[in-house]
Length: 497
Image (tube, rainbow, N blue to C red; front, side):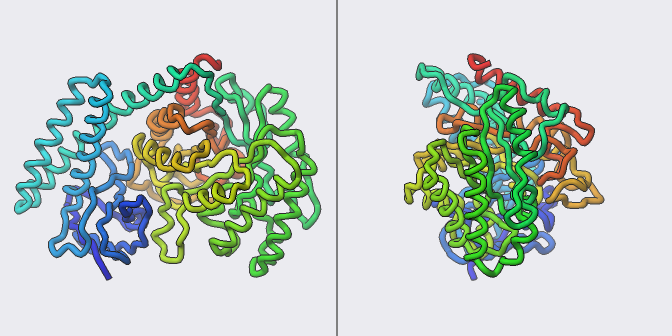
């Protein structure tokens, strides 16, 4: 089996959890089936093909802030192990230089300090590359080059976001953009202050597990109350996701038919009809399904998941509903394809829907960031921009649901809690949640193909999916992320507020 072998320097820590995050990506941007092994100072990737790949590796700086970094394309079956830190420095320098050249070509103004960082990164990398015979010296120089590159890339974030914002503004048309939060709990007095004029749309999730606790017995009271309260606040409403077949929203009784797909499809059909009958003409958009591509509580094959998705959409359209339909996909970078039993990348699921012409109005990307699966490992501004550019090729408007943790400590109310007793290598705090918003949200708000952004978890008080990812803490108090989010929305949408 083809292999990629790296030498792990003493300056870089690769844990067992990191090995579950590391993956290889081909020239077509698709994740390759990969088995990652670590032993002493060696990292070995087993691949199924010999074509060159880029390797994605989690990296933590001196402040323990985390993100995925990429190497340049590497030849498989290397006889001499690559230096992991040198290849990460090479990949980051390539990105920094490419972005800088793009800015200069577009006649964008760059700070002198940014240009100096590029020169320093080049100089240190060149010295690291020619001193590979002395690993300790080469590694130290590579770390410095990598640090300069990452600092310079962070300088370019504001340049890119500002240029994109002005390009959109110069088109002269008012930009219809949905800004909101997702509610899968009652609209409490603690949540109401979040519904400021910086937001214009609210997602209301009719959790299947709560709305149909017994087969055929529907209870819409909580969803009705939330929708009415949102309407009173003057916000547009999105019903959904109608289906999110994880353990948080899958009815207990549905597991009885896990091995009978026709019965599962029948249950989905009946619930869809009940939703349409009850909420027809009461919401502005219908959010059909979320995350069916990545994982489901039921053991469904990929073609069965796609069949469920198409069935839901076709039923809604057959009912004569003309409201816009949305569908979203989890793990949009496709990291789950490292498993050899997966064939369809997230974008392939979306492409099938677009080709089927079933009337999808918007495609959603679920960016639930975190350090452990099923969350998506932390990404930077330009990683998100590249992802949005890639998905824009579908030619369908995009929307994004976003979340990030504010603590590493146990969260008993979270479905995906890691139950940690010790702090992880990543620094996870309210500050890092705020910093992620500061870096990622401008990429979303200024991308021309994105027409909506929603924070996917409001509160840490009620049962929820991801640990500590709410905007309100367990006592119902706003976190600092709320202030940063409001500030950025007001910056990029001053005319709508």
